[in-house]
Length: 192
Length: 222
Image (cartoon, rainbow over all chains, first blue to last red; front, top):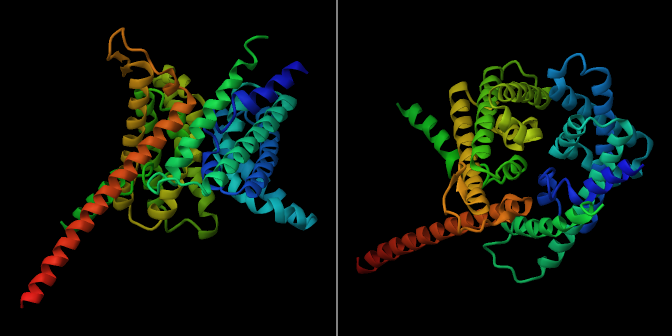
């Protein structure tokens, strides 16, 4: 139990996927304009991450022990098709849920956070429960970073920022400051 | 001869005018994660170079036979094959660096710059242009990686390629080799790039204005 809690908190705060591992930067810099959208994108990403952890575990346990060199290709193909399949079933079963989360799903499938999660979980040898916890922590961390970033960006919209720095350069500098703030969490575990 | 000049131009444009990192802001994830030292940046740049040139070559050679509906999946599988090759070769040849780059070698697959070039360029042009474009784009990517990696290593460790630069009195800025340093350095580099482009545009505008003034002046006289 302690181990699971440790995995969750560590991926949520200390080793945040966006701010410490630079995974999923495209949506982080591109779609973080509005608070509402960012939150929904974060939820959709968490959902895909959990599916990814499941797929990665199944592949690692039953397929890749026989053919380790197929790891990358099989991860991509299986994750992409599973997400596609789930997207279609959500569309059929619950149009409301699809309307709020579904539009993001194809966008997320090619995100490096997804593949990164699968590879990290494999390299660290997580079992199914640990992998799912890892995915939940990563998703929550991603949502947290997205929401913080969107909040700051909405605030700075009305501020007087020089035209030259507006855009990606400014977002990166905000991200740098956020990342510095998150480094403070690194002390969370050293005392225990 | 004329075709040679355009192929050359396709290559050159990736280095500066359409630089994948500074202008198109693509491929951020490997860009920031592995550039805490110059040597890591160069190995990552070479790996990307191999993957991009290889997959551009394959995609443009097979473009007649790739069905339109499944093209993206096929591109990804081609890219993933090259990345697997790079991953295993680095593990065999440079195990120390492979260990340091870790999960970020397989993540080259998710670099949107590579898929972007296949979709936007290699699938529409012949092999020669596609390869030239790939060389230019990955060259530009490598320049950006090297710029970021060397700035971060010089400030963060006080060394370049592991060679001490400033002597014992230099207090390294540890923050530069940690994640925040990556964000801040890239932000400032982009800012510098914007500033430079803006200055150049203003200068060109001024030249154009002066020329127009000269022309209208002549007209008045005439």
